Length: 328
Image (cartoon, rainbow, N blue to C red; front, side, top):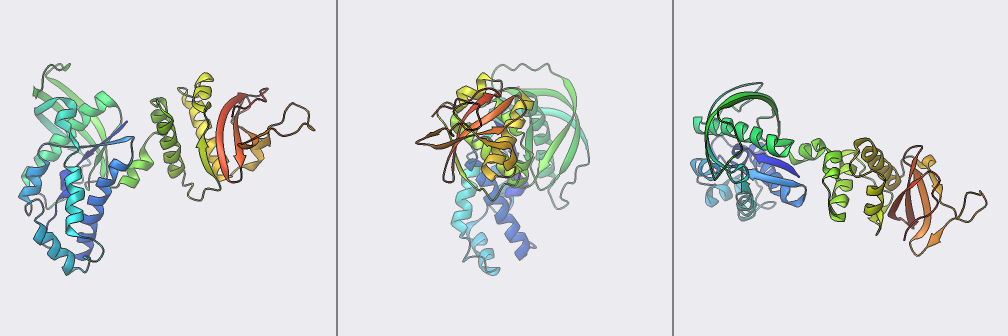
């Protein structure tokens, strides 16, 4: 699972000194953040103080002001104020960093480098941003890689001493303690998708649906936008690749993902061969209701076995070099 902490500034609507480009950017950031829910391997997190910060800036936003700005810049035909607010309300239902870490409040000191903080922000917001840096570190320590979705885009090096915490129940933290950590801040969902480690996600998978999601993500990351074939996962594929170490060995997972991409997108046809009934060159290609059987070189030791019927690929199994069987 990949956690994304939402900087509340990206949700703030400010009608003062507005322009068409600023208005479009605000809408894009709201819709972009709301789309996090469309990706099952992403979990969006907000802070408990997000609503307070939104109320401080134009009342949440105020529907009438938002609607007036849409009309002023001739955007009301494309976007409706109630739709934007509905997406925002969905974001405000995200789990909070406080709930996730079981820490209600933190007393800390902090310094940071390379922080490109937007200049027209309030002191209240700046304090909240520093607070989010601390929560990001705590979540990263607990759950691994994390992104801060923020307009303050940069890689920030944070140094802090956590002096005390107010927790929901017992915590396994030795207080006080100090840390120094680099945090990734990324503005758009597209950038987040391109920065997710598919191999580490693959190691955590427990279902066919998750495998399918990761393969689709890998296709996005490798910019395989023109797919020559549609594809599906065969009944025995997951059970089979686990048997040969393709569920937890990083090098094998990387090679398998690359092979799947090349089969779907037909980018390296020379590595594909008909899967025949035996080793002899004159043997017939195996066929079934799923189409014709093929094998694709993952490396010198293993092959990806799959069926192809028209433009439909069915990922069937992983086979050692001397294996000529394929499940259906």
